[in-house]
Each structure stands twice: as structure tokens, then as C-alpha cells.
Length: 76
Image (tube, rainbow, N blue to C red; front, side, top):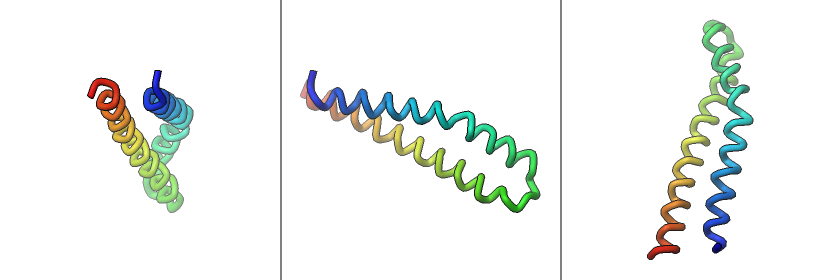
């Protein structure tokens, strides 16, 4: 197997591990924000949830790029 496959597999599995490890914390932050809508401290929690969603989206896009890159190098 070539290096591009191992990079792709490592990036995707590492991302899933981080995603699942942070999932419960983000769910509790969202529950806290929805329960305390008038609280002043919600902006910091909301900001961290927004950054988590944005970084998860970027991870997904980069993962798709790695998969296409591997197929291009392997079959192209």
C-alpha cells in the first residue's frame, strides 16, 4: 500500500476519533445554551459550538479531497 492511502486512512480515522470524543461536550453545551437563553455566558459556549461545526465541516471536505486524491493517484 502506498503512503497516500495511509495518510487518507489516518486523517479520516483520527478525525472520527476526535469528533466522537468531543460530541458529548458539544451536546451538553447546546443543551445549556437552549436552557439558558438569557444568560450572558452563552456567547462563549455558542462560539465554541460554531467553531466545532466549522472545523468538522472542513475536516469532511479535506477527507473527501484525500479520497479523490488517492483514487487519482491509484487509478489515474
